[in-house]
Length: 202
Image (cartoon, rainbow, N blue to C red):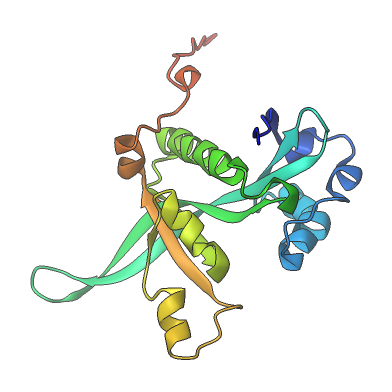
């Protein structure tokens, strides 16, 4: 059986003319994410708490997926060379929300979209100096994020589940460093390196 080829357009939320109609049919099999997209996402965008991008199927005009990002600081308690406690702060791009409609899942769409986010991370790092892409994953998504190169911080869902701990409402911290993305071949787009002429009139 031949696999279907898709062509998508990734656009920022404010560019959408009829947002309510576009998202009305979206279903990623997670009602909390569905509700966030339909009811909360536009307010978050207006308040500049998050920036959201929508993945549109060019052939059908359907919403295939979306992601929302913000900037954050990861604070870690460590010890210095004298074994004294100290605090480290690491800037990161936060992948706050990420979802693919169930009709597009297991077709490579999510993997393609996360790779686009990797390139976006490099653009942000180029301008703002973030050190990593960071997210808090649902238990069901940890393996997907691992498959594209993110590392899990702390205990895995399986380890909790082995001790009869319900992980359905837990979030698992994961990250990938900007340097690791470079090593994997993810770079900002060429036009991000083009110098812009700046004129100053005294």
